[in-house]
Length: 130
Image: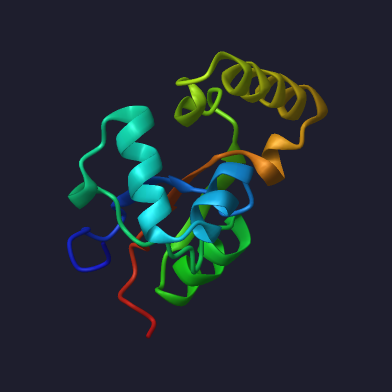
């Protein structure tokens, strides 16, 4: 993003939060299991399911990496935007996802445990300090 943005240009991003239970499960499941599960429950082709690596998928880690890259961090926050759609295949599982959604929003824990991280950063107007 650094090379493609003009000085003052903004980077907007949305990425999974590795602290969310669905991402923890995704990272823990063997690839073969994940492929079969997503094919059976969501009709996802086997070639569209990949290994899961969340190396910097927390607000703090993303902010640190953006600053190291020279960006000015404008906002980064985890949010629970909607109930986890991966569980729609089974009514009890989806009901649990909806309950989780309501609970983390009500308690404010979506700032830590929300499924998505939304962020804005800006390339400074001055030349790259690196």
